[in-house]
Length: 258
Ligand SMILES: Nc1ncnc2c1ncn2[C@@H]1O[C@H](COP(=O)(O)OP(=O)(O)OP(=O)(O)O)[C@@H](O)[C@H]1O
Ligand SMILES: [Mg+2]
Image 1 (tube, protein in one colour):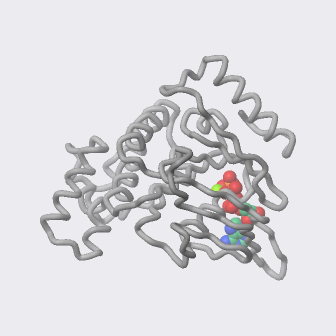
Image 2 (image 1 turned 180 degrees about the vertical axis):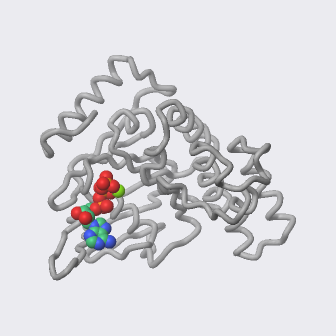
C-alpha cells in the first residue's frame, strides 16, 4: 500500500457554518492523504465533523479554508469518480433495482448494450440477480444497501464514500454486508472512506483509522491497522487495538460507546 499513489489530499481543510448569525466550526484544520486502494475509517462521536469531511470530499460542500484535492486537482463539485453511499440508502423509489444501478451510465448516455452489461455485472456482484426487476420498497434494508453500493460502482467510482452505511441494519445483516464490502474492496481495489461511530466496525474493516473529536471538529490521530484478514474479533490483537481506540476517544469526549 505504501507505494500506491495518493488519490485524495485534504490540506488544512476547515468548514464553518453560519446558522442564525451563529458560527459553527464543524471542521478545523483537517489534513489527510489517502492512497489508492486504502480502506480508511473516520471514527468519532456525534457532531465531530465526520459527515462534513465526507461531504467536502464528495463535493456537496465547499471548504471554508484549505483545499481538497483528488488526483492533485481541486474538488469542485460532485463527480461519479467519488460515489456516496448514505445510511438511508438514497435509492430512487420509482426505479427498479436494475434501473437504479444503471442510472449513472444511462445519464451519461452510454450505449444501451453497455448499460445492460454493466448493470448485469454489478447486480451479480452484489448477489441481487433474482431481484433485478423489483422496486426498492420491496427490498430489505440490507438489500437496499447492496443496490446503493452497486449503483456507485456501476458509475465507475474510484473512491467510495460511505456515511454510516450499515447504521440502520440489524447486527447480523451488518456483519454480512461488512464481509461483502471487504470482498468487493479486495476484488476491485477501490479506495474507501467509511464513516462510523463503532470502534469494532472500524477495526474489522479498515487499514487505517482516523480518530476525530468535536468542538471544533478535527483529526486527532491516524492509526494503521495491520491485523491479518479475516479478522478475529475475539483475538488479543483485535482487542488491544479496540481498547487503545476506545481510550483515544474517551480522552476527548467523556463517554463513547465501544
Ligand atoms: N448544513 C449545516 N448547517 C449548519 N451546521 C451544520 C451543517 N452540517 C453540519 N453542521 C454542524 O457541524 C457539526 C458537525 O456535523 P457533522 O454532521 O459533520 O457531524 P458528524 O460527525 O457526522 O455527526 P454524526 O455522528 O451525528 O452524524 C455539528 O455541530 C453540526 O451541527
Ligand atoms: Mg454524520
